[in-house]
Image (cartoon, rainbow, N blue to C red):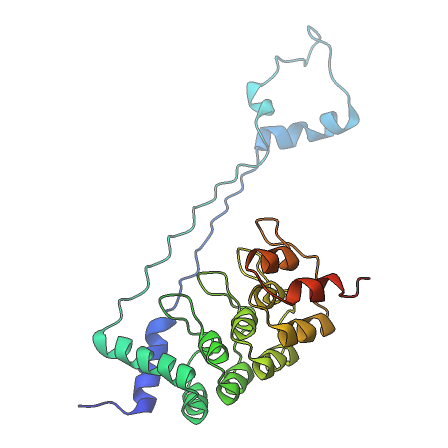
Length: 247
């Protein structure tokens, strides 16, 4: 029997968001009664000289900690459940909706519980796919559903960097207006300004600089946007960055 889109969404959400058990932690404390009895003498600093009545040999147990703490290691997290063919096919259709800009369908699915930060096998989020492909309305819908504009893919590219690469000025403004960090980056440290400079996107460079991008920022390899642009043979952005205002 074929499931309705709503049933598929509920089933899909249940599979991609498994419950993670809370790892219990057990702590057991134990007081040394013999040391407790000796505490008044220890606190006052009083002691009996060896050899006098009442004196006794030091108790080796007094050197032990007053409390013994035992912590149980956390239980390992259960592996995510395997997705069946129908669920994988449904996810593929959702990612295609983001690429193709099917904003109304996405909005309906978000209303049924679809995670806004769903990612594919390359780490591309729905927002990345919509932004990279210039789908302004779908980008807006995903952002308003909770899509994270800072969520980078497996190559360290953010949605803003994707828009910068494609020269999508409207998408870049939309992302920035919804909280995207103008100098945000993934693991490699490459910002949207660096990407725009490399591919000679002068209008994008102007927008990012106007929104506060740092023209002197360097990536994980130590290169600035201007150096990357020069290495790529960009015609205009190296001079544009050289003339950028600095604090």
